[in-house]
Structures are given as structure tokens and as C-alpha cells.
Length: 419
Ligand SMILES: NC(=O)c1ccc[n+]([C@@H]2O[C@H](COP(=O)([O-])OP(=O)(O)OC[C@H]3O[C@@H](n4cnc5c(N)ncnc54)[C@H](OP(=O)(O)O)[C@@H]3O)[C@@H](O)[C@H]2O)c1
Image (tube, rainbow, N blue to C red; front, side, top):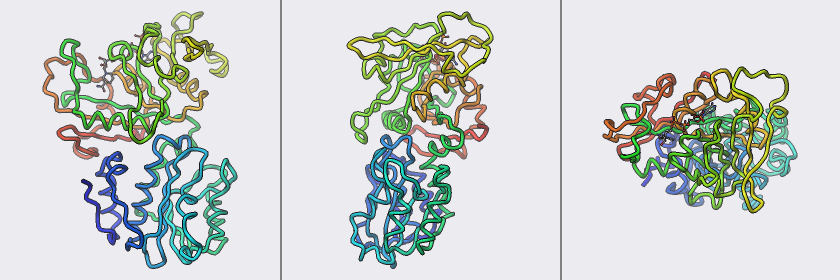
């Protein structure tokens, strides 16, 4: 059971420690929300907004996760709301529409991201908020979208509200909007890599002794991670040896099938592989360009013109085959892979292995974040392969980057500050 700080707690660091210490799947399932009219410090109100935002995991891409909480002028809890689904109402609306204007009179509103100021598929939240009689808006993160970028805040100030940036907790806002902020800044998909390894750095075992590196709880968390990403990518060896489904299997989001991507230059992954079995139309299969032999690739035009796309599958359901040229090292250029993937409106990719994929992506400098599980498996004598490049070169320091423990397994999140 999660041990939540007292609702009166106003030390931002206490809330940050609690929220960072609890795995997000546990926060979603086991967080006990305050009852109506419970006293909440400002920091507690923002912590509740953060946890509420997590309820959108897996459903809001390419939008960010956003949560909102309203409390009365004397800090009594009124309501909470999240952006739950792309294209549907935003957190502010979900939080505040259930309340009477009288309840919102002089209230304080806490939101994890600057309210939007533009007409998208929903009207601007800043206009919606400006018409309500609350008094203060507290937020964590400015929205860098060029249609917002401070305009949301200005609109609300112009309506006579006081606006505060809750600086001491701003890292929570940046974390919730991490993929969105990267997409806006770089116009490119965000790339994570999920790796399970032993203390000795082994990531795979001999086939005869095939076993899990981590325990069940860590693996469950690993599957939950897939919710964060639009697509899951593996190399041909992992696709053949492990034959993974790469599905989500989560109670949080019903029926969500992520995009699945396989790098398979030699086209060795059989069409009977599990990844082609479910929703093959959401599978991208990269193979070597038929017409070209390995060698230096000359970039003369947009990669979209260089790739040829065809499809396979039956019953009218086809996966996408992308033919790419190899570079002089006999590999696809990651920038080509990423550009092709982006053209499918995929905003984030989780690299699930194996070492061939992680290593080449790391060398190409395209990994934004490592999700590292370190298991205590003693089967080191059976190790087949040690990780190369990652995570040693990520300057991984087991002392200071540990995020959670799942039984005896440790989980680390390492942001690659070099990209
Ligand atoms: N511990 C974990 O978290 C974890 C996760 C997943 C898998 N695994 C294990 O890892 C093992 C497989 O790993 P692995 O390193 O041998 O293979 P891998 O990374 O799964 O696949 C390597 C192959 O993928 C293709 N590939 C990768 N990057 C490429 C690029 N940039 N351009 C073109 N092709 C690229 C190449 O195919 P070609 O050979 O056709 O050129 C390469 O040989 C399995 O035993 C699996 O069980 C462990």
C-alpha cells in the first residue's frame, strides 16, 4: 500500500520524493484520493493533479499528460480531472465542469501544463477558464506549442486572475509532458530503450537455460512502460528468438495495440511470427532495399522518396514493408528509420532490444532515455552476451539513478543529456 504524505504537507521535496519513489502503475491503481472538502496544501493539490494526469497514459498521444485540481480559497478539495483521450476534453474542463460557479468563486486551480490558447479539436482552455470566477491559477510547465507559448497564461491574467508557476515542483510538469516537449522542440519522435540485465551486464542467456532476468513484478512494470510509447521496436534476432507479441496487456487501456517495428535487413523474420498476428496493419518491417547493394548511402532527397513501401499479410490486413539502403557499416541509418517511422504519425518509440539495436541506436546518439532493470539472476555462468555500449557509456551510476525496487530487482531511469 502506498504511504502518502499528509494532505497538509507543504514541503515540495516531500511530495517529489513520494511521487518519484512510487512506480506510476502503483500510483494509478493504489493512490487514495482525498475526499471532498479535505484540507490540501498547495503542494498536495499539485501532487493530486500529477497523479490524476497519469490516468491518460496510453490514450493521449500526441498530446501530453495533463492533470487539474480545484480547491476552495481556504484550500478545501473540490475536484480533479485529467485529459483522458486524444481529441476529447482537456483536464481543466473535466475538472471544473462538474462544479457550480458558486463553488469555484475565489477558488484555486492547479494544472500541470499551461492551459491551451488555440482552437484545436477542443476550444481553448484559457478562454474557458477566463470565464470562471476562480481567483488563482497555479501551473508547472509552460506549453511550448507555438500556438500557446505563454498566451494561455496571458489570457488568464487578462481576465484578472493571479497566476503562479509552482517552481519547486516544476520537474513533475516536465516529466509528464516529456515526450510532447521533445516532439515540439525537435519535431522528431522521442526514443526510449528498455533493457533488462544482470549485475554482470548479461542481457541474454543460452537457449537451453532460457529464463527471465527479472522477476514478475519488474516484468509487469516493463509491460506497463509500453503504454507510454506509440511504437515498440526490436531487432530481427529478438523477433526470431523470442517471438514476442509486443502487446500491452494492461488493465489501464483496453484494446490498445501499439505500433510494432522490426529492423530486419535480411528479411529473416517469418510472416508467421507473433508480431504479425495481431493488427498487422500496425507493423512496420524494415528490410534492405531490393535494388541496392550494401555501401555508402547518398542522401539526395527526402527519405520518403527513397523508401519504397509495399505490404504483406492476408485478409486485407497488411503490414508495412519499408526498403532502406544500408550504410557502409551494413546498417540502416537511424535517421532514415526515424524519418520513415515519423511519417506514420508515431511520436515515440521504445527500443526493446536486443543489444544490436540498443548499441547501434546508442552509437547514433538517438536514445533519449534508458529504462534499465537490473535483476539479481545468478545464472551468470549461462550468459550468452554482455551488453556493449549501453549503459556503461550512459555514465550509469547505480548509486544515484535508482528509481524503484521491484522485490530484489532494481529499476533505473537515465536521461541521455547528450541528445
Ligand atoms: N535483456 C533484455 O532486455 C532483452 C530484450 C530483448 C532481447 N533480448 C535478447 O537479446 C538477444 C538478441 O539480441 P541481439 O543483439 O543478438 O540481436 P537484436 O538486437 O535483437 O537483433 C540484431 C539484428 O537486428 C538488425 N539490426 C539491429 N540494428 C540494426 C540497424 N541499425 N540497421 C540494420 N539492422 C539492424 C540486424 O539484423 P541482420 O543480422 O539481419 O543484419 C542485427 O543483426 C535474444 O537472445 C533476446 O532474448 C534481451
